[in-house]
Amino acid sequence: MEAIMTNTFRSFSDAARAMNEVRMNDSVLNIDAETQQTYDGAFVESSEMAKLTVFNAPEKLDMPDPEMAAAAVDLMLRTVFDVTRDTRMEEFAADIAWGIVNSFHMVTKRIEGREDDAARKLKDMVEAYDPSEIYAVELEDTQLLCQTLEGCAEAMRCMRDHAGEVFRVETGRPFNTIRGSRVSSKLTASVIDGKDYLAARAAKRREEHAPTGPIVAFSGGQVWHDHEQLFDRLDQIKRRIPAMVLMTTGMNKGADAVAAAWASSRQVKLVRMMLETRYGPKAAFLRNDRIANQRPVEAIVCEGSGVQSDFARKMRTAGVPLHVFRLAEQAPMAPAARSRRA
Image (cartoon, rainbow, N blue to C red; front, top):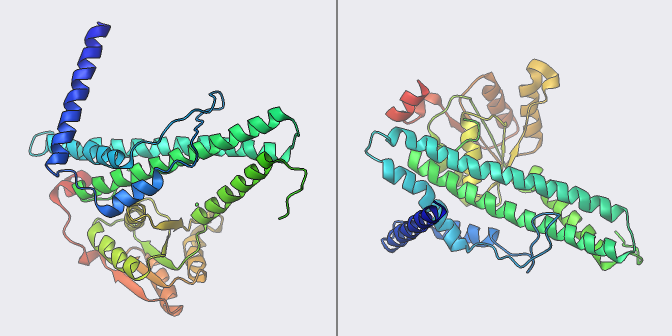
């Protein structure tokens, strides 16, 4: 039985490889230069050695080839739609594809959690200096573990964002998970490296959560289906303000979710200004004040509730150039999407 399974798996692998080669030769896989450049930047080996768990010794492991990784993600998602197109199974292709993209998302979160655990251990070790050789080796191994997991998380985020963009192109809607001093001369090089790594990591995390750059503020209602017009306008703004940071009111559906999907697909830094629920009914309006206090250079508002009307008023009062989108100006909802919503 094992031999049969092995031969079957080999036959399947050979068939998949042949299909991949045919599709690539026929130029079905069309990875644009910007996407490939993103993969090249994410699949970087920061060290010749890698360490993936606290138990395993460091070993020489390469990152996947970025071109092959990009092609694999593209092939994985598009094949689902190609196989089911114009069949009775076509209706379910989007659900399957959503599951694939969400799998990338969940694995990314797990890697980030392991990286956080390793970073906490590294911080504790740096603070509890020990001059022994055993300590130095463990410290170097822990830092290598952090660096390896950080690189894997970055690569997985790249694949997730690419898969999400293929999902958007194929389904006509964005992917949404709901459905960045002096050193004592007594310290060893290992401790110094550990401190430098933690400082760099902390700076990166601060940039992820409170990034620097010109802010484009965004607020929209929880009912919104036309993502194309929002993608187009955000693309126009990004061409004028390449270093823009998108700040949204943090909702997980509707227009805010579309804006977050755009930021993910364009590798634009995103800040979600969340509600401070302790303020009760005033929380959303106070959040608008906090966004206005960030001095955005432009703002977008999509018609929604009184919260969006207040947002628009405060942006105009602050002299912020404002782009307004109204519910009635949306393109008609596709029949398939309308039936799913029903």
